[in-house]
Length: 401
Image (tube, rainbow, N blue to C red; front, side):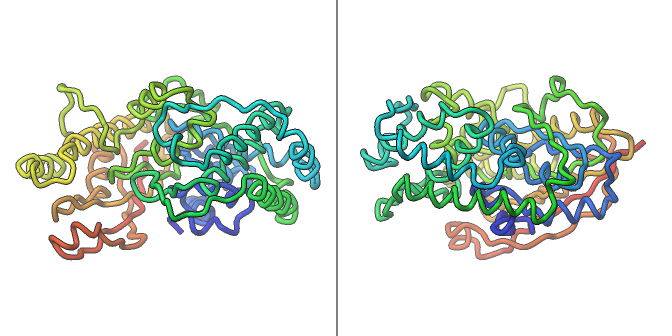
């Protein structure tokens, strides 16, 4: 339940493959465990594609989400718009687009980003740019809905694969035809528009609010009521760079050039190798300090010498996030957060325990830590240090009154 795989049959959430999402059923279970009602407010500070927000809203529960990744905020913010679309409307608009696309001037994209020059066959890229331009001319909510479907076919239409830390080139891959791929997505969306009626979500749905924001600084996020529940999962300290993984979507719509992409990368929560560490920033926990010191001594053996800085920056950022949550949450608010422990150079770092101790220092009570599953290690680590399962956990906290 802590992986995206559980969403493959869930209306709306299955339309876009956001690998870092957890399952709708996971959120539903925690809303039930916490006894959440329509008097509560649910907050997801790392909302991603909006799984937590959708699960709460389908129960009629107010929900607010933030994320720093523009494509995630867009996807999440578009989900409520599907409730405004009637069955058959997307098919009719798709047929119109199919007729006008060949004569449409191609949309601008961030072609100075290296991946854009090699990700697509030339004719496919041109066709996609024409589709993008035609979709941009639609009125809301159809523009946003079709953009979501458009973003969902970029990877299938490319030589790329969202794989681990990067967007990887797969030259052996056969890219899909854009029109055929979009036709399939329109069919899926039509099924989901009917599906949300069959599930009666349309009767209880309360539109949620999603903000392009930074959970390390929540002063600009307005809450009508202090949130009483957080169900979330932060980026893991595993070197994944979301601005690389989702670079195709970003380059088609959210950034105009490489400079803007790089600026976005350096503004994200620092879970990736290009994280910049300020001289004044210090490790906020002794267990992390011990591992950072160990890795600095062995810097020459690391596959990337910036790992110690990344770990320091990551826990500084998570400490800032926990402090912000303490400020905005209601007394006795509950938190359920999925985190992943990590292993570097054979040394395990219990992220769940470290973050829980940091939370206790900031005024939270740790109620329990649940092991969700065990995962393997990288092939390099297993080759050098053997296989040691790494746990993925759910930390459960309560804000003290």
